[in-house]
Amino acid sequence: MLSQLEAKLGELGLSNVEIAHAGFLTYDHAGAPADFVYSRLALHHLPDFWKALALDRVRRMLRPGGLFRLWDVVYDFEPADAEARIEAWCATAGDAVEGEWSRAEYEEHVRDEHSTFTWILEPMLERCGFQIEAAEHTSDGIFAKYLARAI
Image 1 (cartoon, rainbow, N blue to C red):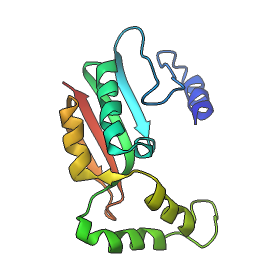
Image 2: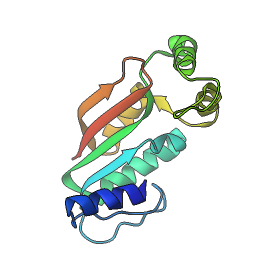
Image 3: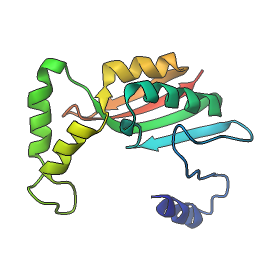
Image 4: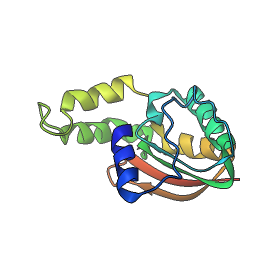
């Protein structure tokens, strides 16, 4: 993904983007506060305790008013609906990997990853010093995109 980003930046002739190869909990930001941080399909690898610490670190690396764009697996349904929603999601995959994900991989994600609910993540973002300016949830209740401003 980083090499694709580097290629895209080269195509666009952009030189004001710093690419960091580090984790949420290991990156040590030096220099001026960042204007923008983007995370796609990475935060769900952390349990909620560590998500909160990671979000706090992201907030502290941003300048006041800076933007955080987050896109991840974030469940937007009630716990009582989880079995049906997760089954519906897993049913969209095939039995074997054919370009995207297999059913077994979706099931493994649910079992082994740390995706959380919107009603846990959104207050966590706010508690860490973000104002959610936009939230998009997919109709299946599996993915969410946020645009949050550092306050």
